[in-house]
Image (cartoon, rainbow, N blue to C red; front, side, top):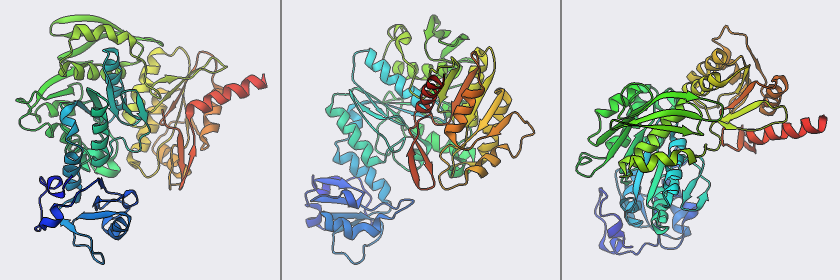
Length: 492
């Protein structure tokens, strides 16, 4: 593809020579190590590396032109000067990959909690309807039958466009994307044409990055702003949790059609008479003055809200409620989300990704609704993340569980002992102990739990690693629980 075509939407700070515009580009890259012959290299200023320092390396590896924010020094590579290379990358990537989002029905899901569950439920519904789904998110990226590991919840704009283009080639029709506040703030979804934007909720998280809840909300609201002022004419939809006060604000901030949902109040898509058991949740779904009895293997009211969000997204894409409701019993729980892991002691042990105060509280409240005896909660807080939520996490655990065991959860470069001290610094409650070794903490919970008790291991969910300092080691809460089974079985 010619340079002139790639840069036609970019704001140029200086004229570009015709011979540069006529260069034929085989690849667009932002990582100098990935450069191949006849590449266009976009120099991005990242948190850990400035691409402008890698231009010479990119040229050596085969780049024939660079897109930059400042004139390169000590290199003879032709360059294109723009005010913002992150924005230019999004524009160039969309053109290079043929604007793939315009060939897909695209759902963007944002919110503090529930993004993964909602996108995975949409994927399952598309499957059940006999179509080929796409997913970009925390657990994995999925293109029809193919799944791939993921690094960031929301990939950068270049990777995003490449994934979407691959989906188009694989004849994916509907794709669901987890859209993080970091991704929105960092412009990772620029150039992506969403048909539906879903808002799940907004509770405290990522204040280390955003500073205030208002900034955090503004970042989330960008997804709805990106639907555009022509959203009504272009049949764009916003599916919004109206139980959440931030959701109510969002209804006023988008020009798209709005479909509200909730478990309390008066959502257009509403769940009433919710009944939670250990193996299912039953409720009545109301929509357009009709009622539908529903039974789902997803446990808890928070999961009912996630299910409503997924149903709302499918309705917005043109599906019929009478077609969707019969599919609900076939939906399966999401890996690492309220996932029960069996063990030899017959203690109900649940692994969940809950890593925010609100997420942990909702999971524990759900457990409290089905518990007949004691609840034990194993949980920690991540290092180099929002420190203000640490005492709030501890308070949720101590208030609802009978006993909490505070442990490590990706301490990174921070001292795990200090993180645990931060968690309990403000509490006068005593129903806890600190066992920093996460495996030992899980084993201890299983040691003291009796048949009929419930153990919640929270914070990591589907994750399979633990980051301590610079070292990343394999660690899976579910495997640890199963290994305890084996030890106990041999012991007995």
